[in-house]
Amino acid sequence: MMRKEEAANAPNVVTGTFSLLTQSVDVLFDSGAMHSFISAKLVETLELNPTQKSSLLSVMLPDGKIMSCEELYEGCL
Image 1 (cartoon, helix red, strand yellow):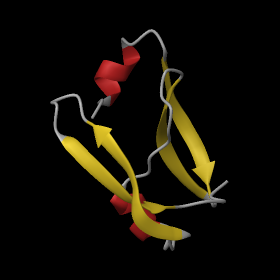
Image 2: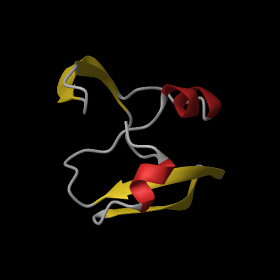
Image 3: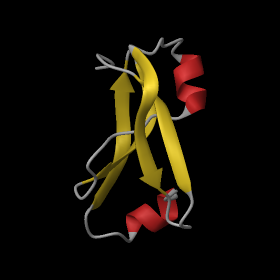
Image 4: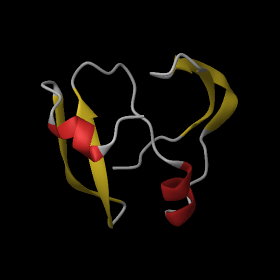
């Protein structure tokens, strides 16, 4: 996971505040990323319901661990 301080020094990353369903959130845009992710805390705050549940995507974290993303959220903008 990249923190704000690390993102500020990354050449292909932009950070800022973005409105998501009328909620202001801190965002990190990584031009090299293939997918977008949302925190479980924000999902709870926005009371979002997944549009699909299954084993959608396996992601390798910077520490080498594999994380399985099992929920898809669409239409959040």
